[in-house]
Each structure stands twice: as structure tokens, then as C-alpha cells.
Length: 420
Ligand SMILES: [Zn+2]
Image (cartoon, rainbow, N blue to C red; front, top):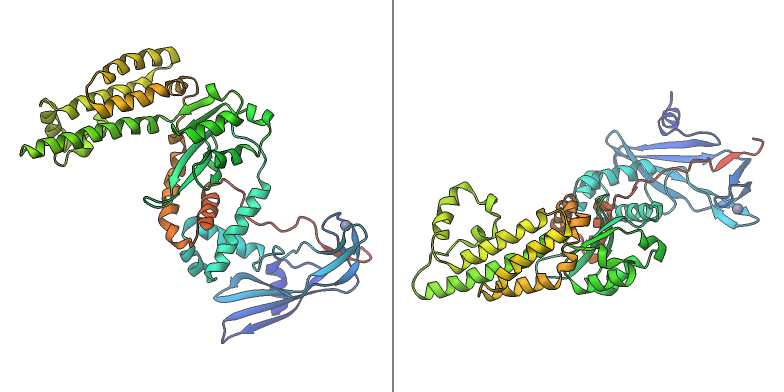
């Protein structure tokens, strides 16, 4: 078996294609394989699948292929073109790699698999391709995946905001809660951005949306009410976002009290921030005693803490009416507690209560997408290598979009013999 036979076999080259030449370059450690086709062929029009005579050849394409042992391997081919009476002069669907790619299907799939496991710099190093080429492969993978994606609106949607870097711009992410995928990334957290997502769907499609989990954020609410029929009963304010308002209030009470005590020369609240924020059952054993002794003192933050711990139980109820009853009692307590931050948080909750208690029906939170959050945190840590915001967005779709990313060769042969 000579080198041409060997590569014909391992590359699965079939007539009318054949290998014309194999050049092994020792000094550059590379193999170049030149592929040609027999004369007397007919060429498939990629639009109508009809075969016509050969028209001419496109300029040579060079595809990077999987290495041959330690040697970088390239396939050279001049793809024939067809002149279809209906569709004009057309490039064939290449058997070797996608037409706008410089990698074979197999090599491009390898780059994608590596990129799924590590960041873009590591991908370029491991695959020995430039940063730009690796990035292009990711970008093509996302575009390919999005083109293949079935057009459907998720039954249960989550809308969440993410800041790219600390204190920086926000992105809004739209999740499919059940599939645990990111469906859409918007540029900011405006009403218009979220509306751009909804606008992809018809009224009838959006009618099928069962529930939307989100933060108590007016632009999200307005966008959802404008587009999703029956949004009043479908919006569920995410319980963790709701709790964040209460937790922030507890923290403010602690800070104010700490400042007042400190002026009197007492620093008993020093280093206690998280004791008041952690859920009671999550307080570490080694700090339990310290916490119990603090609770025995007559502290404002202790009252705020009790109010906070109490509201958590509202979400245990299975019926909306019971949640409302529970909230009413809690609200009376919180609004009479004489702790301004707590009163303010209680008021915010009251204003939004109609879509907090919808939890009883839909039982969704954005935490269902927790797996995604972990991935996004990972992407954020890689973000310094992204160079711009578009790349960040592409990375989110790549890692969290649930897309079919891999390139596939055409199912049908693009060439056949004239007499076949
Ligand atoms: Zn045609």
C-alpha cells in the first residue's frame, strides 16, 4: 500500500474523487494531500439537487485536517462549480469541510470539542491553531446551531440580569427553564431588549407561555405584559431576587446599628455581617454559639433578622390564598417594626405581591437554571480573553445554548460519473 492508497483509505475518499499526490515535508513536519476528481463528471446543484455538467473550478481551498501522527495535515482541493439553468453558477457542498471554513469537518469538530472543555487560549494551544481561527470555529458553531434550532417558545421562561464585570454593564439572559438553556442574550436590561426576544414569536405562540420567572424589575415586567398574553397570571417574581431585597434591608440595619454602637465604643457587631444574612440552618457550627449570644442581646439587627427568617416560610405554602394570608400577617409585623430599611423592603414586596404569590401555581425560580449560572460564572472568568462583548455573547450561546454545534458533511455526494 503506498501513501496515496493509505490516505484514500483513512480519509474515506471515494470515486470520482481520488488522491493525486501526497507531500510529506520533514522539516516543516506537515503533510499536504492533494485531491482531484476524474474527468467526465456531473456536478450536483446544491439548491435543486439536479446534476449538470462541470462548469469550472473555484480557486484551490486548503483545509486543515486532523494531524497525521505528529504532523499537521492539510487537504488541498479545487471544488468544481456547476451552472444550473435555474440557480446559476454554484459552488458545490464540499465533502471535505464547510465552504466558509478552512478546517475539515473532523478537525473543526475537534476544535469545538476542545473548546467545550477549556477556554479559547487553551483551545488554540491544544489544537495548534491561531486565536482567530479558534474563535471563528466557535462563531461558526453558534451560527450553525442557531440556524438548526427549532423555532419554539419555551413553556417556562426565566429572565435574569448578569453583569459582565463588577460594577459594569448588564446583560439580560432569557432561559428555557425546563431545558436549562440560554435562549437569548440582550445587550442591557431595558424593556426594548427583552421585547426583541418576544418579537420573534407570534401572539399565538406567546399565548402558550405558561410562566415567566424574573426580578422585580419594571422594564422586564412592562415588556412581558406588552407581549405575553395573560402575563398578569404568568409572571413570577423570582423568590431569590425577592429575598435579596429583604437581605439588603437586614444588612442596612446591621450597618447603621454597628455605626451607632461603635460611636459608643462597642464593636460587638464587627465581623457579623453574614451571620445575619445566612439562612438560620446554614450558620456554621463554629459560629453558632457566638450567634446565639448575639441574639440574646436586645439588638435591632436581631429583630430585622427574625423578620427576614420569617418571610422565607411564605414560599412553603402550596396555595395562593395561604401565601397571601401569611404575607398579610408578616407585612403587619414588618411595617410596624420601626426599622426603616425593613419597612421599605416590606413595602416593595407588598407592591409586587400579586406576582410573588403566583409562585404557588407555577413553582418556578431562576435557580432552576442554577447549572447555567455556574457555567456563566465560568465564562465570566474567561471573559478577559474575549476581547469584546460580542465574543462574550457568542461564548454564552456556545456553552449554554443547548445548540447542535457540530458541522456535518453533506449527506449526498456532490459529484458523480457522467455515465452513472
Ligand atoms: Zn439548481
